[in-house]
Length: 159
Image (cartoon, rainbow, N blue to C red; front, side, top):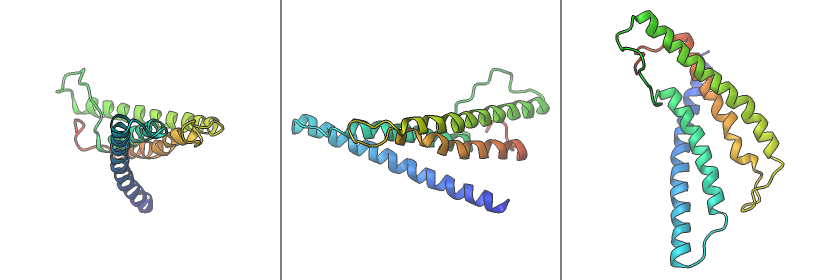
């Protein structure tokens, strides 16, 4: 069990670093293309396509980071002074929903990736599945963190 925890800690550190690299790459590619298009009157034909792939990757990686670090938007529809038992129940429900979303991303992301690997992105010639392969990859930490929280719980349900 300790190896699994250690693996996911390393994996989370890796995806945080990857998210930083993707964000910088997006900014650079878009900035260079804008400069070339307006100053030099010629752009990079592949830049929008690569930027789109990077945005999709950044989105799903950030989603996985958000599940682990509780960074998603929360709405308090119920009074905050509910009994602790109901708070725990709602937290379990939240984690079950996250687990379900992770499962959907894993199953249907895998199907979408397999289906789109046959298509080619026109600007780069890369398989279109490159854009979607991040869905099943990002679903793995989402599923792990949801299960971990279901089993171990969270200290502060409002964290």
